[in-house]
Image 1 (spheres, one colour):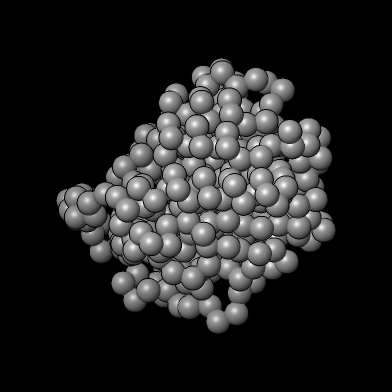
Image 2: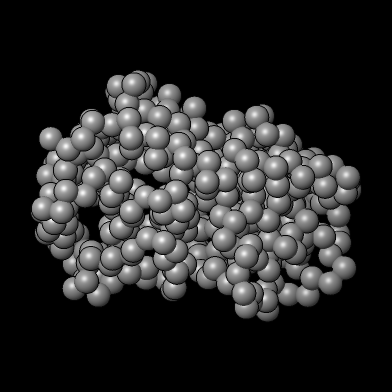
Length: 364
């Protein structure tokens, strides 16, 4: 089987790499068509080929990328038709209205993974596909009920734990801006800093935690950081809330998760989160908002404590309780490890994905 995996904007190199490598381990001939990741290095290709054929003349400019996008898509579509490389598995399509037309130029069968809660305007993309992958039952229901996807075309395939991050050489220490952590319990928020992720709710909740605990907020900001710092200072915990507002490369990731006593994702809304699957790779005890796929994960695998979204009191109670209970943290960690090695393993995801490819009709 010869498969083309397509991620034009390189939004999720860890996912692209992990799925492609797992498919290759099963003997699938995989080519990943993407663009240069603008923030740093990406995992080395393992058994598959990575071809950076998008936005080569854009030089990082969003406007130039948007202008070049249709030409790159059409060029790749023509090449795949000539090579008869199918299925074509799209990961991210950044220009929803335009891409709904462009994907129809690609050979069939066409598969799309819905990594996020798609807007209603994305229904045309869904209808252009022979199969759509959701990571959770909740995601599948939304694709069917909101976007009108045919139920028999939507398939649930779990997102895998990013275990490659836990098996790197030359790991890098925590950024000095995190401050002195000796003798401290560490609560970690990790990932892009965005308003919907409830960081200010977490800071409010943290005001009632033990004085020996430190909250690390680590990730590239997509929102102003200064109001968060002022809020922490106003609550009298400015010295215990340490914000590291920068992109964190793969080699830097392990140090944060290995040091964290607790990982907290207080999102207001989400379909799923790559940070969750990073935490799984390190068997981190988790506190999650009861939103989207987080609910299924916690209820089915017992690997996280759920709290209502936006509820600082409930979040505070969960953090205080778990920081004081090492046995319960150890239980959550063991459940996370089991989930990562079974239901959320990449070999399991690749097995299901290959079976889906095989069930689809050949190219027209």
